Image (cartoon, helix red, strand yellow):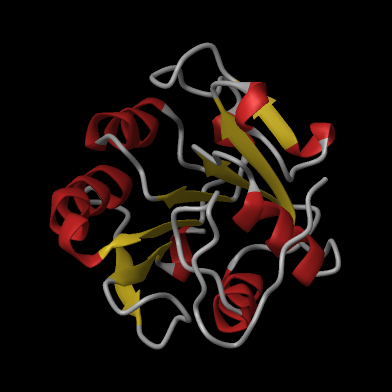
Length: 179
């Protein structure tokens, strides 16, 4: 797989949407569930962020990228990648994951379909990473669909997350009594 460099400052790589930094990797290593629980990165693209995170955590995190085309993947090992039929196809066993990551998602419809279709018994958290200007489109979908009115949860922007100034990291976590 290809090489990459991680620094303290958020850095854009030509084949990754989000600016990656050691602070971002530290944050994600802290908030994502540890092995043996699974995190799905839905729409992983080249897999750079996911592979960097797997390496950074010394494989304490199990992250599987979900992508429509295996040819776009440059960084993930085959066992860390799940292929779906199209960009609108849902990963049929997504409900086994404890966390989902949506990094620069292209479609509110896809996020909504994941959240509506799957039983959320195992799902503890959703991490959304993308442009600050895009968040309002996703906020209501995630809050109402993931938490509903009965379970409840907490949605928070993580400040100083190690991303570019125009990007943001949002952690959506179920209330602990419902996990």
